[in-house]
Amino acid sequence: MSTGTLLAIIIPIVVVIALLAVAAALLMRRRKLRERFGPEYERTMDNADNRMAGERELRAREKRHDSLDIKPLDNRVRDRYTRDWTSVQEEFVDRPEDAVHDADRLVTSLMHERGYPTQDFEQQLKDLSVEHGRTLEHYRVAHEVDALSVQHQATTEQLRGAMVHYRALFDELLSDGGQPRHAPA
Image (tube, rainbow, N blue to C red):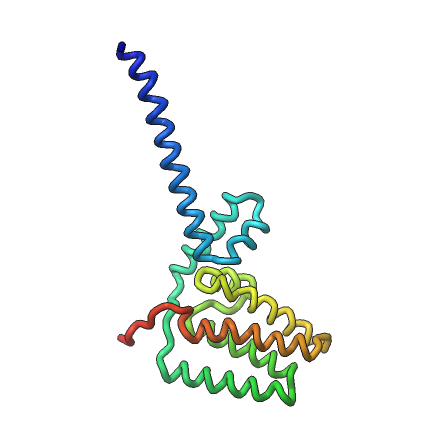
């Protein structure tokens, strides 16, 4: 066989192998994003212009999250938040709207304590999505009910549901998002 014929066979094979390797790498990266962000992956894809833009957004969230100083709680602080949550739950019996507002404030305080910025709700969602994508919808729903309750438009059942939703994120933040605890330095 001539050199030209060999090159005509080898070059397309090398190109196909390279394309397959790139495709496999992209699929693995997509799968990692999907696993890390959970339901938030699909939500972001639905809101993005295209898949590449959505995945770029998720990678930007990861990069920002990595720059944050997210820290575990020491046991005393964890116990204080647990007691505070118990008080908020007890408050629900007599003052459900106030309890939901207090639950929102307590979750926000816990986020701040862990190192999450808490000034802007939309940014909170993006920052939390990196480690808490599976419970983020709970936070969204609870926050919507809290907004309704400010206008006295939330039903008791919605308020009860908001407490359950706040509790899901609260528990995850309190337990460091399922991440292993680091010994205090």
